[in-house]
Amino acid sequence: MASKQFWYLDTSYLLSYISKQPWSEWLSEDKEQARTARSVIQRLGSENVKVPVIVWGEVVTQLREKGVNMGITPMLSDFETAWLKREETNIFSQIVRKLSERDARLQPFDCLIVAFAMACSECRGLLTFDTRLIKSKAIQEILKEEYGNRSFIVSDGPW
Image 1 (cartoon, rainbow, N blue to C red):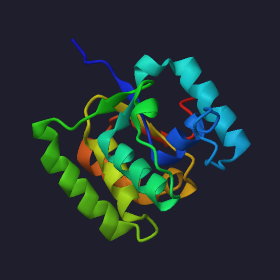
Image 2: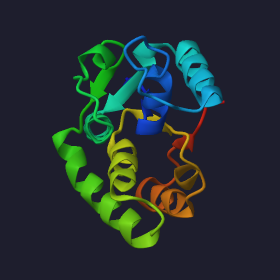
Image 3: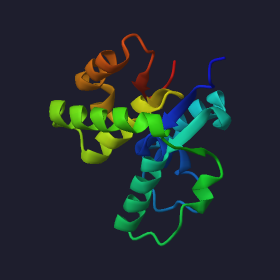
Image 4: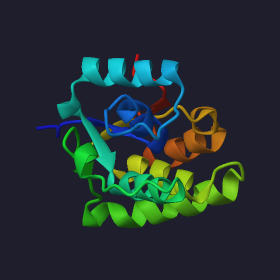
């Protein structure tokens, strides 16, 4: 029996999704991105979406940089947190290394988030508004090297 597949959110998608919450006045995300994120997640159903633990870390970092003194508890209620399985940690570290070597445009957190999503067997794709990730040839090359014909999408929407 095949395991359930989930869509993972990156930081830009999560922040866009939560930008209309009453407690998130500090966010100044693009309104079109916010509408897209909410629409896509509503169509997918939040039960089919997870947030990698690494993304929560980046969100906390961005909150601190913006001087926002608030925990992430209100954000946690909509999504389950994604974790790596023990057997996925080696492939995760290999993908992080390959991404950082092959695509200098990707920031360290980008490499960690993409590698996390690619290494997780339950992840069918990463939802992002970051065009560097969407257009990265290195991501597609590494995906093909590591997984052959695995269907995995890095996009701003699954359709």
